[in-house]
Image (cartoon, rainbow, N blue to C red; front, side):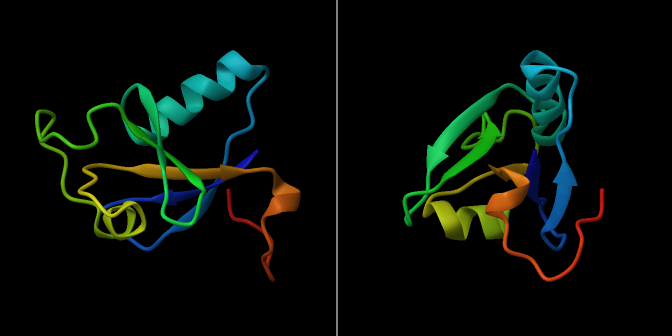
Length: 96
């Protein structure tokens, strides 16, 4: 699986989520967002994975301006937009 990782104050970039099984992939995605996952629905109908405390500053995570713009409400910390490799239309190979 491949994901677009959105980090505060950094350009979006692709990351590989290739685990041994679904449980392993879940743990990898949790590591990327820095907590338990919550899915939020984007304005265009897509889904973005964020830390379950995405709207709170309890963990002292910085505001993610790109994720906030996509969601329409404040998102703090990292976010992932996940799809299969065939779903991503890119002109260059992904960097893992």
